[in-house]
Amino acid sequence: MPEKNVPSNFIRTIVQEDVLNNTHQGRVVTRFPPEPNGYLHIGHAKSICLNFGLAHEFGGRCHLRFDDTNPLKEEDVYVQSIQEDVRWLGYDWGRHLYFASDYFDQLWELALELIRREKAYVCSLSPEEIRQYRGTLTEPGQDSPYRTRSVEANLDLIHRMRAGEFTDGQHVLRAKIDMGHSNLNMRDPVIYRIMHARHHRTGDTWCIYPTYDFAHGLSDAIEGITHSLCTTEFEDHRPLYDWFLDNLPVPARPRQYEFARMNLNYTVLSKRRLIRLVQEGVVQGWDDPRLPTISGLRRRGIPPAAIRRFCELIGVGKSESTVDMAVLEHAVRDELNTTAPRVMGVLDPVKLVIVNYPQEQEEELEAVNNPEDESMGTRMVPFCRELYIERDDFREDPPRKFFRLAPGREVRLRYAYFVTCVEVIKDAEGRIQEIHCTYDPQTRGGGAPDGRKVKGTLHWVSARHCLRATINLYDRLFMVPDPTAEEKKGGDFMDQLNPDSLTVLRERPVEPHLGSAAAEERYQLERKGYFSVDPDSGPEELILNRTVTLRDTWAKLEKRHKG
Image (tube, rainbow, N blue to C red; front, side, top):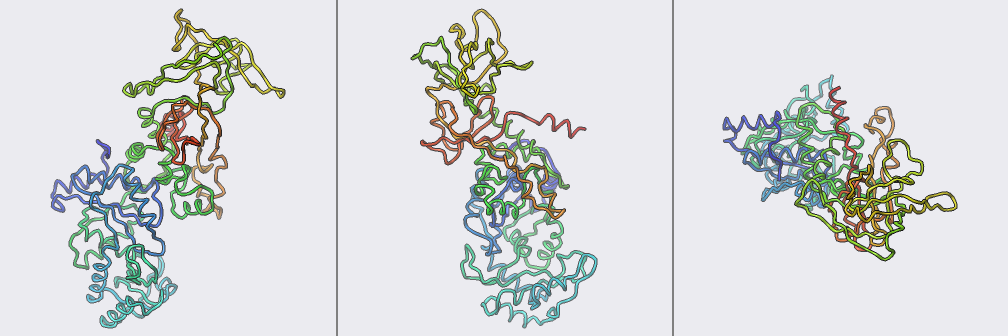
């Protein structure tokens, strides 16, 4: 469910005042209106949380509406993925699922009404000529030579356009506003165009389709939306949004408000760039855990509550800014710290042999599932003579302040015993093959009855009982905070890709407890980070994706912001 006690912002204040003043009869109806031409990314999550969150807070409703006005780019696979992503984030539109294509008949009638009111005309300029006549930011546009066509001629042409008599681009329907307007969007914008393309919902019923600008605001009005929330890139479109509502008989009068879109460093949130990454095989599909897509974040193991918390942390403002990836990582750690059970796994294993432990003996030791939540209980971990520990947990010649295992040094094996290194076995090249230790049987559970202390505690896995896992370690997808900066100099953002964004470790020992783990379950591998079970994981291969490391850079980030 949406988070409670969300901090206020300027849009929330507007909605709150509208409710108090009985604007829109006190109703709050918002919508999340994606175009079904790609997968959602974390930037969309901000809009989802805002729209659904406000509706929930003020006792209203939020619609999920697909603005499907371009059949050349839209597919059902995107419709399904978007619905799945919104549900996964924790939001429910109930029975309020809509499509702009639901309103094609109504939009057609409204277009005819504009013609009858002499506020729209069929233009026969080519697309290139329309651009030339449009003018520039400093020069006014020129009226189309077809702007003075009669109502009867326009109605005749628009019906013939719908009947399929003309080719793509031969004619368009334009709103008749003002070719000298300072806002280029108001210079007789195209509102219908010929597209002989099959629509994913209406099939071949139509061969002319409304533009996004025409359909979007009118769909809001048809649905009774009260607060139309969008990013600041649509601020210049608001006069056009209002013009259609002011000049047509619509059942409701929504208001558009703009908020700053979200930018995140070390990645890209442009649909065009994301498509390149997928199509050129840089990543392994739209749900690759390195991508900022909602499906990629889900596969990486990021919980929906962490994304909602992240959106709360970054807030809703009017000025665009770039959010540090550390803010997202902080939200993820904060959530998983209290919800993810602990297990042990070794990423760079070296064998530890307890030479005075009986050869065939085995035992089970009790381990805490999550020290942050006692209700998560404990589990039993198998223990035997031969274990695996992390290779970097041992040093033959330890530096100062290295408190882990070294020759002659005693350390604690987590949940198990104190052990002391007595010998190191190497291969012909001098690489350590085994570390031989003795153990103190009086220290079972990790404490000494005589009260002696050790400074180092190591995680481990039983060599006899462990599972072998494939572990995917993910890093930032790009090497620089703003990978698109080079494009301003004529470069390519793809040149900034991090060649080490994925490291695959195979056959790594982990607790047998993970053998029953289900897809997308999240765990903390003690001292190594948070991991989730990949959807492709199964009985033949356990696959773990690292969600985030344990190191939290939030404190450094806060210090930098204060400075």
